[in-house]
Image 1 (cartoon, one colour):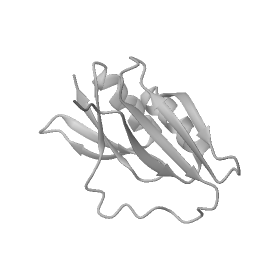
Image 2: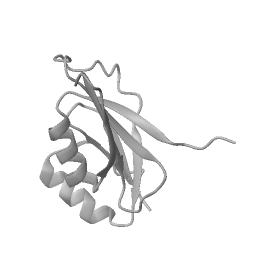
Image 3: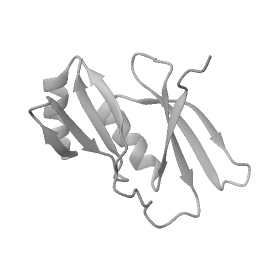
Length: 121
């Protein structure tokens, strides 16, 4: 048997990304791993419900250029019981990048351009 464990996003500015995920989605770091030589750092984030699925943020010390996300045809999805309040918060943050009212969903973009779908519960 296999189960989902985590998904990775590579980020240029770890502090900026941690702040974004904390504010936008309430995600908090639960564990970290740092290379002995400081060349990389991994931070695993968990949601407020402590679900078993985690988001891993990978920071590479020597990376300076933005990551090529291709056509951004991939995304994470979160469902929420506070859809309207979260939508208002994301609108205020200016991170909504696409809305589909007919489907009742929208997407936000993180500081590195990764898309995250928000779905009502």
